[in-house]
Image (cartoon, rainbow, N blue to C red; front, side):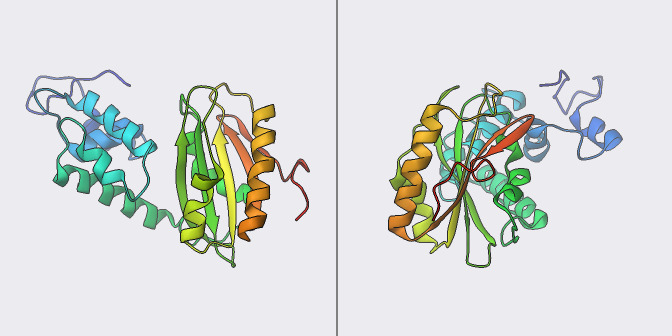
Length: 226
């Protein structure tokens, strides 16, 4: 996190994130600093820098149905503040137009998942689409360690079944920066593709993302023919 003084009542301070953002544009702040701008201030027991870090972690490990609950469990976050964060995320999502955006190829979802590419732990995410290949949702299925995220077909396909999705794209990040699949990745992909056949949901791809690129099982001919 950048170093600056965040006491908004102190008139004798170095430029804070509000001033830096006004001077450099809204794309200047990182994720935690955007949360700081939204919340404004922290609490006596949880300064704004620490609170913003906690909120960002909660956002990255939550889905729509449990986001507000997870946020309200943080020190310094009540229902009102949790709703502010949730509303800001929903507004951004609508403006960005991710939901119901049509994709031509599975790799088209990669730009929507860039925030996970630099996460210090593995995140396993699913992207579901309807028959017109319009995105229905993105879901965090599992958050693991620096080298592994435990998954089970039950959790992977739960959202897709509930949404009556036509297809699913699985994705996870490699914090190590290595963009090639491990033996565990290859094995789990085979299991997931087999489960998709039973459920009648098209397994479109499994994509690995890093800060420098992506790896597509589909593009490398590593998926079994439907």
